[in-house]
Image (cartoon, rainbow, N blue to C red; front, top):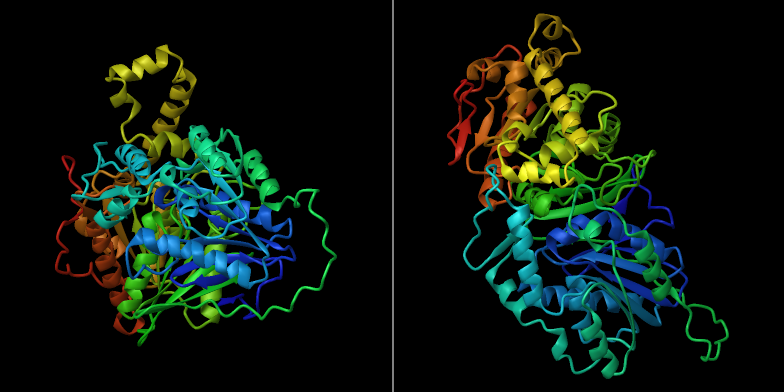
Length: 604
C-alpha cells in the first residue's frame, strides 16, 4: 500500500507499487496499447544500475506506454522465493507480462538487461518486441564473468579476495547458492528452437552469432553497440545513465506499428478496475510503501505479531538503494520485525526511487541531506512510529550522526564504519571517495610498489593528482592531530562538544568498525585512546569486528551487527533508561563471537 505523508494517494504521474506474487514492482499506467516490461539483471549489476533503470522506466512511461519494472524474488524489496531462485525469476517475468495484459495492453514489449535479457528470452511467453541489452549467451558465461568481478569487488582489508563458500559465489554481498549456480549452468540461448519475439533489438558486444540464430528462426533483428555498458553496471557509487542507448531502447519499444498495417479506428478503452493494494507481507513481517517529504520513498516494516513499540530508522550507505548493500537492509528489517521491532528504510534524494537532488549532485556526505532524514522522522512520528535508534554505514553513518545531534527524538545511533563526523564545505566528495575508499593503502605505501611508478611513467597516474591527494591526506592528518586541542574541544560546535551535549540529553552512540577500517583513527582523534574514557563519552565501547570487510558482506558479519542493534534498542528504551549522561559506561554484555572492543593502544 502506498501512502503519502498526509495519508493520500500519489499523484497520477507517479508510479505505484504492485505485487506480482513474490516480486515487488513499480507500475506507471498509461493510455498506450503497448505495455513495456523492464527485466533488470541480477544482484551486484542491478544494484549498480538501479537508479538508471528507474530513469529508463520514466523515459518509456513518458511515451504513454504502461510500464512495469520489478525486483526478482529474493532481491530488492521482494519476498524470498519459496523455491529455487532462477525458476522464481522466470515466473516473475511471466507474471509481469500477464499483469500488463490484464491492465489492457494489446502488445507487450520487454527490455532485458544482461542476465535479465537472457531470462526474458527463455520464458517461452508471448512477447511482441524484445530488447536484449548485452545478454549473456548462457548461464555459464554469467557465472564466469561474476567470478572474475568477485575477485576485484569483494576484498578483505588487506586487499585479498574474500573467501568463498563451497559451491557458492558471492559478489557484492549477493550470494549465488549451489542450486542457483546449477540452474544457471542449464541456461543456453543458442539451443533455442523458437524465437523469443518477432522483433528484436540487440545491443552489446559479441551478439552477432545470437542475432543470426534468431534471424534464422524468423525474427527481424537489429543490432548495435552498447558503448556505455561498463559505466552502468560496474560501479555502484559513480554509475552513469547511458542516455543515448536508453533513447534507442525507448524509441524501439514505443515505435508505431509498420505503415503497411491498416490503421485501426480509435475505440474507447474499457474501464479498468483500480489496482489492488500492494501487500508486502510474510509470516513475520508486514510492509507499507510510502512517499513523504519532498517526494522521498520509504518502506515501513512492522512485526506481523506484537510490536514492542521500537522503531529503527535506516539510512542509505553510499548510493545503495534502500534495500542495502547486497540486500542487507531488507533482510535486517524483516529480521527485526520477527523480533518485534519495526524499521523504516528509505531513499535519500538522489538515491533509489527518491527524486534527484536540486543541484543534481551526489548525496554522499551532503550536509543538506540531513533534511531528508528529518523528513523521515517527521513522517514516522505522524504514523505513531517515532524512531528511537538510527542506523547508518559509512556515509549513512555520517548522516545518522548529524541527525542524532540535531533531533532530540532520536535516543541512539549505531554508526558502522563512520569515516568522519564532519566534512569541510567545498570538499570534492567524488575525488575524496575515489582516492580514499578505493585505496586502503596510502600513497606512501604504494610508492614502494613497482606498479605504482609504472603507472606514473605511462601517464596512467597524474603527478598533479598525487600531489592533491597528498595535500588532502596531510590536511586530514593535521585535523585529526589537533582535534583534541583545547581551542577545539572547548567549542560547543566541536565533535566532542556536540557529543557531550547529546549525552546530557540521554542519547548514546554505538560505533562499530571492521578491522583496520579507515575511520578508526577518527575515533582516536576526537575521543582519545583509553577504552573506558571513550565508552563514557559515547555511551558504548567501540566495537571492532575482526575478519570483516568494509561492507560486512558475509552473513556472519551481519549477524554481529544485528545483535549489536538489538542490544542498543533494548538498552535505550525510555522505560529502561536512567540519566545516561551521569551513568558510567554500560556494563559489557556477553560478546558475540568475533567481536573485539576497541583497544586504543599505540601498537594496536
